[in-house]
Length: 310
Image 1: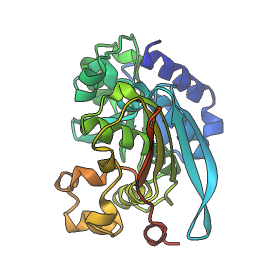
Image 2: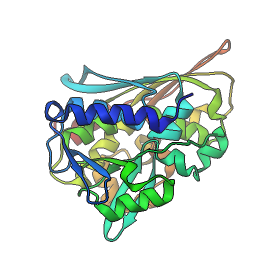
Image 3: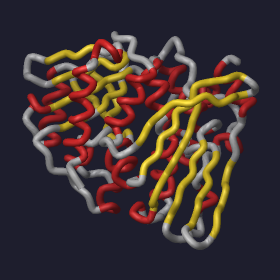
């Protein structure tokens, strides 16, 4: 398979070429790194969010929008599908890189993680990328500068002039779209953490509602988690049975039963104080090849309506 970063770079070049149409801005830093503003100072939008999700998955997923209802209200939903779950979702899309550089705080996702390959997923899958370019999507309230780009270059081993940082705020249309596209990744990650071999995940398709844009990144983080934990639906085709499939869906409804803004406030916005089991999609169908189908969890439209202000 071609390098994840090479495939992501082709999509990043597309974003640069169509920046005006996507309502994004491109900034070349003094050290040659490229920052793409997908939704910090630029408005971004639905199409920007869809392309960003493709970049985050290294071009190995199809991402599109549709309309579905929540409590009778038509809302945009994002659907993502991949035949390469281990590579697209765990080696690329997973938001596993915490950036804290010279006062800058952000969360990195995308295939540049595979150039470092220090997270457990890479050992389980047996993959490490090799590329002269690094593409890291950054979720942050501010755009990264030269110090962040140099840190990414040092960690990945690529020249700083070959670092590309598409960046978005959680509280943006782009952010709501890109985060809705994470339902599949959350299911794959949860199943992998439970001990299932990621390479036995054959296909994954998922859908989640696009949360209304909030007035702050904190509230946006809460709403986008609601969209996934109470509205995310996933269908997985896997190669073998497993005795812990029932643990893949989110336990947020049973654990708390409230919008995440209340949950986060109760835990003083300390995400690490929450059970990891809540960060998963609401409902998961698991199709075991030749053996049967299991369905675990369920969505909660009433809670979503409360969270989204419907």
